[in-house]
Each structure stands twice: as C-alpha cells, then as structure tokens.
Length: 117
Length: 113
Image (cartoon, rainbow over all chains, first blue to last red; front, top):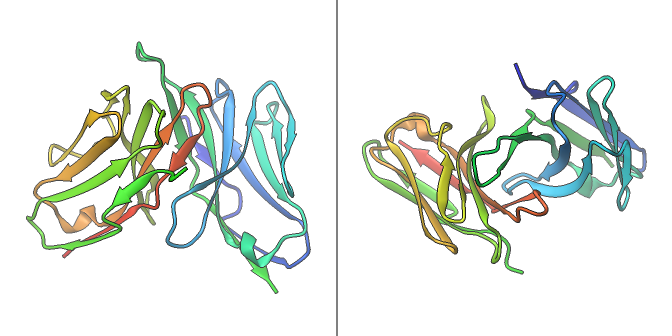
C-alpha cells in the first residue's frame, strides 16, 4: 500500500555535528514532500519542502535531498544545536482530486532527534 | 500573523460527555484540516474542508465524531459521546491552495476518563 515510513525511530547526535534523518516513501506519484519539526507539547512546524522536479533544496542549516529512483527523502541539519531536539516528520503530497482539487498529506511515524550537549 | 488558533489547549472530561474542539485557521487559507495524534497511530487525518465545504471525512473514526465549518474563520470538531480511546492530541491545520504547505495549530490535548 501507499505509505511514508522512517528508517530510524531515534537519533542521537553530538552538539555541533551534522544530523541526517531519512524517510522512505512508496507512492511514486507523489510530487511534493515536506519536513516538519515537532517539539514537545507543540504542533508540527514546517521546516522545508521540495517538489519532485528537484533533487536538492537548501534552507538555513537544513538541506532536503530527494532520490526518486529509490523513493528516498532525507533531511540534513548542519551544526546541530540543542534547540534542534524534536521529532521530525516527513510528509508526502497524496493528491486526491475531488472536484475542488485537494492536497492530502500522508505523514510518517517520525524520528526523534536528541542532541547531546 | 497569529497562526492557526485552537481552543481549548487542554480538555479533561468524563466518558459519555460531549467534547467540542475549536479552530481558527490562518486568514486567507481556504483549506482546513483536522488531525488526531497518538503514540500508537501517529498523525491521522480525520477530515478536511475546502472553502468551508467538507471534502473528505473518511478518516473520521465513527459517527460519534462530527466537524463543521460554518464560515472561513472557524471550524469545530465534536465528539459525542466521548470515550477513553478518544484521548489524543487533536490538531487543526490550514493551507493556501497555491502553496500546499499545511500550517498547524498548537493542538488540543484531550483526556477522556
């Protein structure tokens, strides 16, 4: 079936190191992907997105890589800081046109990132 | 920009009681989504609206759940009667069709005893 899943449920990194969070998706028709960060007690917060016509996109300290051949998505965080500790979700656009046009997101289970000071 | 606003932030109720969760989307956004998050099942889409019209409610668990969007700036999710298994964090999100990115509210943490 169609699903979005994560390879690693937990990840611990030393402060200052780079972090890589991975995600696999199975719907080859998905054309839009988003990474969200969720801190304890808060709602998911948008980090960065990428469309299927790109294979890399950079933001501030974050980079998303998309490999459509193997249906793999990754989030790279440079110089990881304690404030980066959170659960990270990838989500894919599961287009489901229903007259008005719609954009349903399917979320993965999440990866917990712990930054060691 | 105030972001998506949800109320209440926390709700504790007894089994059998009616629960109403409220959401104010970001002004100008024409999509509104209701999600439920639990440790076991993660984030689940319950229902979403486009221009105040429900588009897909296939994620609503059962008839005890209902959602409405009477106008562009307000939606509510009702559970009647509530059950302990409804305990979860309920999120509301909104998006602009052109951008697709969904912006989430802070959530309502519901505990049904």
